[in-house]
Length: 584
Image (tube, rainbow, N blue to C red; front, side):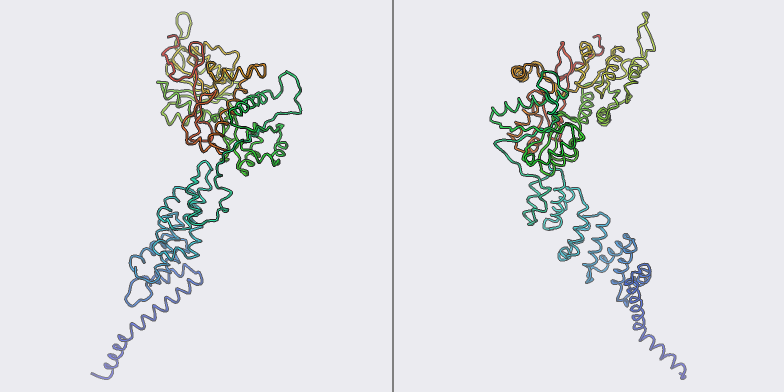
């Protein structure tokens, strides 16, 4: 072998001997450059630099680190899916890697970002010491605070029963619920078990119920005392005074039964300024129940006072859910307009065989709310709404035209067929107490002479011009939460007592006031200051003068009875009489 050949062979052998060292130096140099890009937050360049190093090679000692930092670079580049896939690959290929806790940390963060809370918590649970690190605790607090659904947090707590952050997040979520929906027992258990600062929840914790020997009931009514004169003439605010007389009489009756009611009156004067001044009175904070206000423009002031002082407030006359708003202490004695619409749809669905229905309503917000609620429930019950119309007073004649425009006549020129064919609809729902609207419906149906059932509300009974024999002949049915039968023995006793005391017949408002105070007084006695908790546990409860109440699923009365005429008298429509023709 000549000298040159020997030199070539030596160089080849040296190359083979030192190649791994040279290659290792290349891996080291490339990894160092990639880390510098990462440190400088040049994440796009870092990804490109780490990419060749994430491929397995027995001579590459940086494959795990390069894969990890490639994932973090992708995360910072807003490629969370790429980052997650790489981190999961590390867990699968290199389960014994010494920095697996950090892998789980970043996987947890990505899952949290994607609102995959249970997967995130699982990543942290794999390493208990990781879950308790200050930065991890802060991360859990931040992300779990975004979960508003109590049931989600309850399930998470069941999976992680010793995790303080999960427990506190659940307690806070419960505390944010309306008081009527809070699980007070669970929240108290969490506070006690994890030694949370109870003061942190004090403003939102459900108040502890209290039973008293005497309950303070404060009336915030527009008495307009400065305008009242000692005469028997009807006052401007006579309806308010009538309501008060009924409440006062019931309170006196309750006191004789040992249910002690301290009735206090405050004159709001129909004024926001006057109402605001009343709310500054220290004595008003001693109330166990506020009745009113009776005007919507004062409601926000009183509602805020109610929430801040955790005092129940209730309206005995309103159907407007705006009175309740977001106040867990507010209630309506009457069914809301929404409930009346819903129950009316249910009554028709249950009692009228022909499922085709028409709907007419007025322009007032109350009419619109009632009609919308009816239509929503009707759809759920498979009632077919063939026509729905908002009617302006000046256009009310269009109702009659739509119902009773004739297209055929008999030999005597009496209509025998109409544009809306006979028996093509089963019912008409009228969401209005405006006579201009409902009388047109009644007239139209009467002209048709078919089997249509009209459903309205009890205010129609107050129409002095109404022909009640027509009501009976047409089987008109009315939602009637405040109706009292003249044969009701409790009403007879109330009426006799009222006449004896005041020398006049009680008005509807006096009756409502008496019924309200009688019912609420017994609620206070039986269930305590926060009587709504007790009411939630009850099914339909009978009233004293009214038919009944159901507060099991809301802050307003959910029970709506219906009435119609039978034998010349108004009776509850327990089993309504439905005939094929009005002349039958």
